[in-house]
Image (cartoon, rainbow, N blue to C red; front, top):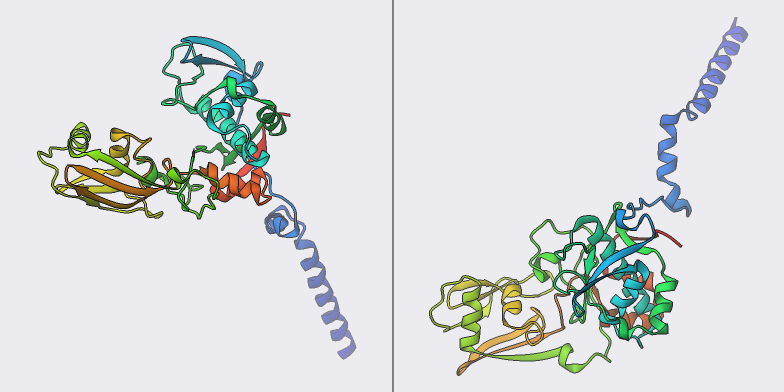
Length: 331
């Protein structure tokens, strides 16, 4: 009897063991294995956004050239080369230029997907208020090689083209979109405030600068922003963002957007909102600061420094944009 019971127990244990082995073969149980694949050195599949309708036939875009006042049909990679001519020095390190090429291409893909040019009949323009700077005369072999080497490459996040923001010099720290651009929509997940290793070869007048404006000019700019200030008596930094940039300025008791005031005065003189000092001296307003541009996304002089240190284009872009992927739309 005892021997029979032992055999029954052994059979039951064996049956349970076989059941445990076979239960792992169902579709529901394979999910965790897939989720662990990246830890085993395998890459997760990245969602690629669709190619804009305008490019599906022959990869050309209709570009309105502001300087000539004409529309031209241009191959999109030729358009990207022209953007490089307008946006970056053509003798810069190769990987910095390639990083700019990827962002320039991403910018136009996002523009074609989500926006309509203000110039009727055009897909995009060379108007810097609408899109990117463009200068075909500055395109040389180095710029063309950067375009060729990155052909079809774009930056994406969650299956969508990113907003490929860039600026000249971050002053050592990049900005969130809401502080640097006064961005009204939700802060993009891929934008973060990060240390930027600006090159020491950058012109000293953009690394650290001083701007002077007459009190009358500042008052006129403030009034253009629909602020009712009769007399400019005090000026100081109000709210600051994650990067230390001024979000607001307190002017004679009124809160004014620092970004909007910079644009209303002169953004080539009032170079950034990374203000280190601001005060009134006599009939002048003296502003001191660091960096050049809105500070969001990739710093060009930071890209320059990283390229000099041996970083490649993808590493540069991923330093400035968090958790993004670089994908290839075409060869």
